[in-house]
Image (cartoon, rainbow, N blue to C red; front, top):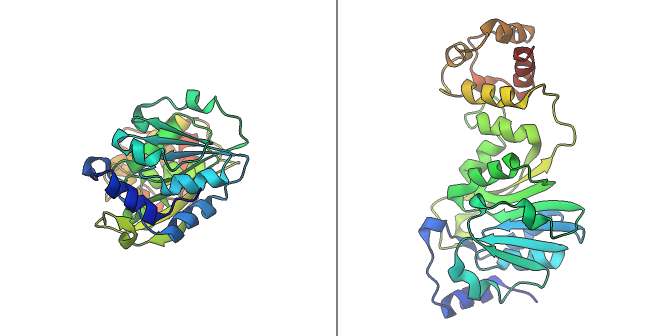
Length: 275
């Protein structure tokens, strides 16, 4: 059963569907983009896929063709008559707020070798969704998501760039982050005000050796409290001698800004603070 974007438009019109700005509803209307997202994920019949915000089901339909099973979380129950007509038997739709749901019991119903998240994420909750996946310790092997371009640029940002921030480091500790493709705002209905980007996150098998993750993540957050200030100003409550000890090894000092430091130096500082 193939569900085309044209069919999606017909179903939306037939059901008098009204797009809801509060849910960030922008549905993809280009079949090539939908297929590209699914292909970039490299899904196979050993894969359980989580989709967040399936909307009218264009991507959901293709995911169901490729995966062993799909669990799709949709907050807007008015989409039910449209969505449920166009999914495969291996797909479960759960209506409710993904951010408020305990996901682990949902996963326990399924047998799978790989767990992927593949979605066109609502712009307004992109970062909270990805942070939830990490903090709830959902055992995700790969995430492939379409997000607002500006947000995607921060996800994959490198040191010494204006996009680089605490979230860039947080994500890069857990995942290898890669841009997969650019997506024009013109392939959505309704058309958003910004372009999008598809980003993949592949779980790191060998994370950098941290003695204490809590110290590390607090250090990162505090280092970027005021991005234009130096570490000396942002980290006044820390043992600055231990921080300086590490910086000096890299020919740096406390006048450096957080945006100049790669994740490896932050790990080294956090481990030294833990001694």
